[in-house]
Structure formats: C-alpha cells, structure tokens
Length: 237
Picture 1: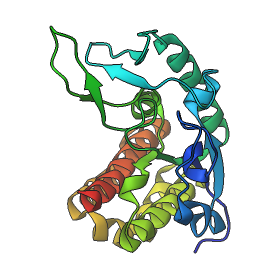
Picture 2 (picture 1 turned 180 degrees about the vertical axis):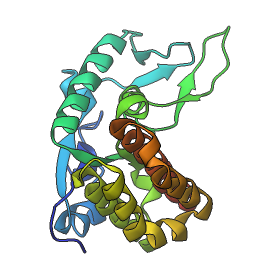
Picture 3 (picture 1 turned 45 degrees about the horizontal axis):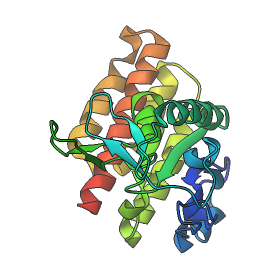
Picture 4 (picture 1 turned 180 degrees about the horizontal axis):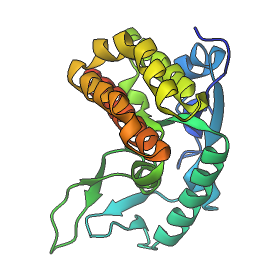
C-alpha cells in the first residue's frame, strides 16, 4: 500500500460505533473501524447531531415533493432548513480536511444515496438522495459510497485502491506532464475496472495541453470518480 500519504476518509458516525441513531443505537461496521482504519484517517460526521436533534430523536422522512423536504414523521415538523445548514457546514469541514472519499449510511434521510420518499394524496412515492448526500453529489469531488457496497473482499480491496489513487491525484502537481504521468502509472488499475472509462481518461490526459490546467484537472477528476463509483455500484448490484 502507498505509504507517502495517509488519505482522509469521512464516515457516517453510526458506522464508527457512535450512538447517534434515531433510537440511540449505532451500526458499527467492523471492517471500517478495523482493517480500513489501519490504512486511512477516518473522520466522523452526523448531520442529525449537527442539526441539534440529539439521539434518541423523532424519526425523520423525506417527502416526494420537488424540492424534497425532511420532516419529523410523528409531528410533520419541517427540519429541511436545519438539514441544509448542517450539510453545508459538514461539507466545508470535509473539504478542508482534504477528504478523498465518504462512506455514507444507506437508507438514512440525510446520508443515503437513494432513499425512499413518502407521498401525500397528490404525489407518487419515489426515491431521492438524502439531504447531505445530495450536497455531496452536487459539489464534493469525493468518492461516495454506502456501506452496503463494501461487503465483499473484492469491493473493499477496490475501494482502498481507489482511495489511494485519489490521494495520489490530489497531491500531484497541476500540469500536462504530471497528469499524463499519473495516467500512465495508474492505467492498468483503471483499465481493470472499466476499459471504456479508462480510454476516456486517456484522451483527457493526452489532450490536456489544449485546455487550461485547472479545467483539465477538474475534468479528469470527474471522470476518475465516475469510474470508481461505477465499479463499486456494479459490485453492489
């Protein structure tokens, strides 16, 4: 494993064994707190605790409206504004901590990537990202995965390799030569996961001299994240 830099990975606090769930419990994931923690620095977060809701707390759900709202199920109290404020604060903290990946609690109304929504008489039930997950999906530049996608040895191995590849990308210099060297060094790793997206990344690197440095780095990172996320989604399916 790469030893020059220890990547930062953010994790939903309940998965780290913290008693922050609605019923005062946790969802400890032994692989995350065990094996993964020996390779990376883990950063804990919980949107509901940041919202000031405490634990235990009333259950929450997402509505099927557009935009989606977060409500207390028993009372109908709208806590959407609190959720968005907490999400923005946590996102800023994770970005400042230079996180390259986030492990999210599945089915959570704040952290789930695909959460069931509740409809009223004039709406159809459906699904939506949780409030915090949506913030990350729109702006993070981090690898996003739910803990349910990391239940096999292959998926875990691929996730760790992706995290270290993203850390190497984060630490490298901006410029055509550096980007092309990064792609050459990681080409076989990328090709093994998705040959089509790997070829697309190769074209971005090959044509990097034609675009501004910041723009080409953003484009390459976006495609890189897409490749790793697609690989992990396919294993979870």
